[in-house]
Amino acid sequence: MMGVPYGLSNVNIDGLDLAAVDVDLGVKFGVTTLSGWEGASKPSLDLTNRVRSQGAIGGDSFSGPRHITVGGWIRSRDPLRILPAKDALLSAFAREERLLTVTEVGVSRWAMVRREDEPIITRKSRWYAEYSVQVAAEDSRKFGNVLTQATRLPATSGGFTYPHTYPYVIASTTVSGQVFLTNPGNETGPVTLRIDGPVKGPVVTHTAGDLKRQLQFATSLELGVGEWIDVDMENHLVLANGQSSRAGWVTQRGWSGFEPGLNTWAFTAAVFNPGAQLTVMATESWQ
Image (cartoon, rainbow, N blue to C red; front, side, top):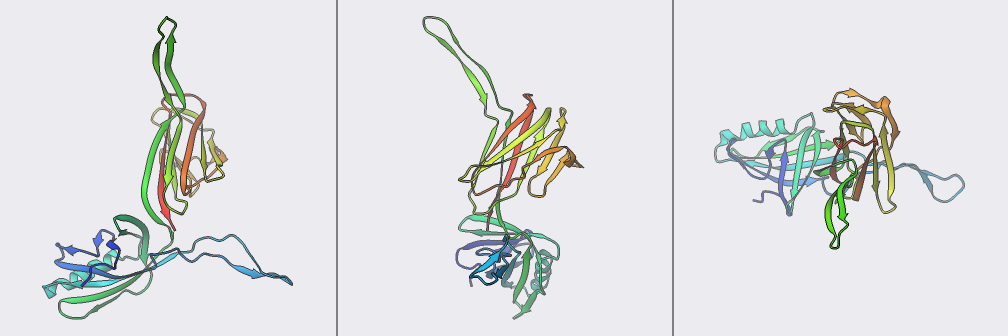
């Protein structure tokens, strides 16, 4: 009896491993079906036929929700263990959002899902039961690692040549003021920036794509030592010290995402301060 379909090594919902022995519960879980995870979700494209002309007209298209069905089995040598295992399964596939992680050939991707339809759990014998649960991910993307990198404002210190017969060179230290991260996926992922003070008028310029598109985010805020702002690029939120909104101080709204391929974030400010720092947190994403 297989634990997971071919190619998969693990399916985990809210910490419950559906392809392994659960020692605490005294049962073994297995997965036989994982439909809706492969491929991309249905797009929102709506086509309208042209009037007295060939073809159709379509507006912007976005990804819809992802519908996933997880099916499998539970078995135990102790019939009394099946009932608490079923309870644990229903708790994991909750009405509220839960983390679903799927590992395939050693690569893990995840999505936030919640129960969408009536779960079906059928006891086939005293020692064996089968289940089928349908869940939905409102955000259809499959996410990977959160990549993090930081930089200070661009600067160069040290470095000179002593004017003698045999020049004596003092090495310099250069801070590029840039963050370079690569999204290995095929979908734009979410990005969060953290800008730590002291800094006045911070500016972050994002460059990505084959055409080197640039989007600039800027604020007129002046942050002191120990102060910072969190910038949620996807949800257009700017919070001071993780709490109070500072949207009114945003002067350029170049909201950007973690595009497939190489992405660059350049950090500048109205006034240079060596203590200022930009931290970029970007999540790998797939359709």
